Length: 102
Image 1 (cartoon, rainbow, N blue to C red):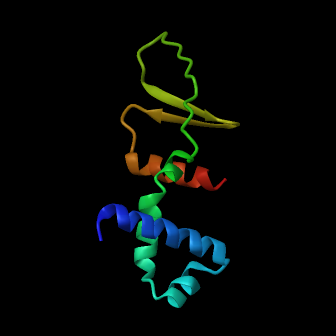
Image 2 (tube, rainbow, N blue to C red):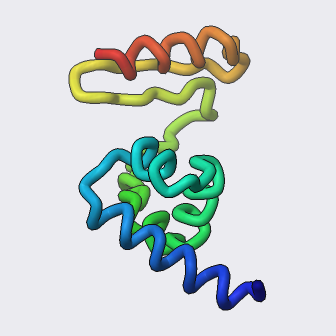
């Protein structure tokens, strides 16, 4: 089977599974289709899904350069993080991890 025929076959199989209302696992077992192949082709045939992800939106930065930069201050709502020039990378990573849970 050539690549075009495989694509056509898997497009049809993916549609059949969606229309069946069954879980992927149940449908694959019933159709004697390997689940890993199903997921492979679903991912391969749906590259447009990746473009549906929320795009990163950068925020504007206002700077006041009145003296040499010795630290960076980050404001997140009421939280304020001051990062000195020679900061501990591990500690910053842990702080960010904790803030993500808040």
